[in-house]
Image (cartoon, rainbow, N blue to C red):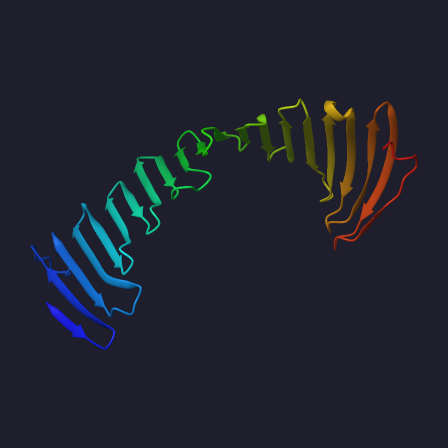
Length: 276
C-alpha cells in the first residue's frame, strides 16, 4: 500500500495480485484507490476499486460520499461478450445499461430513472443489430408523472442488393405517427412518407439525375385544414435550383415558383393569389 497526504486530501493506493503473467497482466488483479478530502470540500471520500481476470472480464466500482450525506455510485462490469453499467446519482436518479454481442448479433439496453418529481419519470431504450441479416431495431418508452407513456419504434433493413429501408412508429397522447424511408442506390432514388394522428400525411421522392443534379417531388395533405401542398424542385450539383409549389386550400388553388442559390439565398414569386 502507498499513502500520500497533503493539505486537502489523503490518498491510499493498494494493489493485490493473485496471478503472475509475464506481461504484467495477472488473473485476479485488484487495484483500490481511497481518498479522504478536507472537510471544506463537497466530496468527502472517494473509493475506487478495479478487479479483473485476464481473458474473462472484470469490474470497476466507484463510490463518492459528500458532506450533505448524499453519494454517487457507479459500477461497470465487463466480459468478453458484453458489459453492464449501473449509476446512482446524488439526486436519487439512476441509470442501468447493458451491451452484449454474440456472433454477428448485438443488443443494448439503457434505462434512466429520474429524481423524484421529474417529468418524465423514466426513459427506457433498447436496440439490436444482426449483421448477417442486415437488420437494426431501436425502441424507446418514456413514462410520465400522470401515468401515460410515449413510445418510439424504429426498424431498419439492409438488403443484399444495397437497398435500405427504415420504418417507424411514434405514439404520444396526440395519437400515432408512422414514417418510412427507402434508399435504392442502383436507381439513385430516396423516398419517404409519413402519416399523422389527424390523417395528415406527406411523401417525397428524391431522384439523382445523370448530370449530377436531382429532382425532388413532394406532397403534403392536412384534411383538418382542407390543405394540400404539391411541390417539385430541380437541384443542381452546386446546390442551386428552382421549383414550384401548388397550394390548394378550401377549394382555391395557387402556385408559387421559387429559386435558390447554392449559398442558401433565394426568392419566391406567385403566378396566382395565395389561397389563404
